[in-house]
Length: 149
Image (cartoon, rainbow, N blue to C red):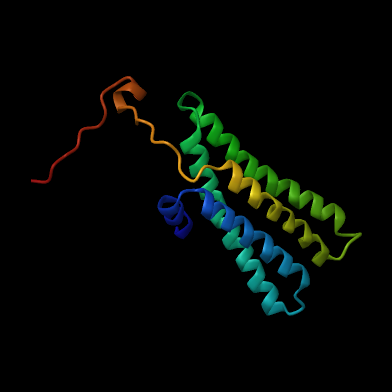
């Protein structure tokens, strides 16, 4: 919830870059810590970074999408997130017999390279677009608002 609030307040770019940095740095720390408690804390921070990125990316794609292809573009972004998780699991399972599991967390540092890319490509704010009336979208009148008696 804090990521969505920060995205609304500061634009999508800053919270997305911060989420990527938290995700990557906590994955790096997961690879090097030797204590179970610290490992759990770094995994928690990784989850916070991912948990921030998913709604931020979805909101950004939703706002930037072409209105005619909005559902397709948002669906593609959500599918990409799911496929990324599946691919990471399969690759991790394949490499696990050869490598120490801590070493696999070093792959999580790669998104840190995307921070400058996000900073350069994601606009700080998107231009406002007019929101179409419900009638124009659905082809019928929108719901009427009831006033309390």
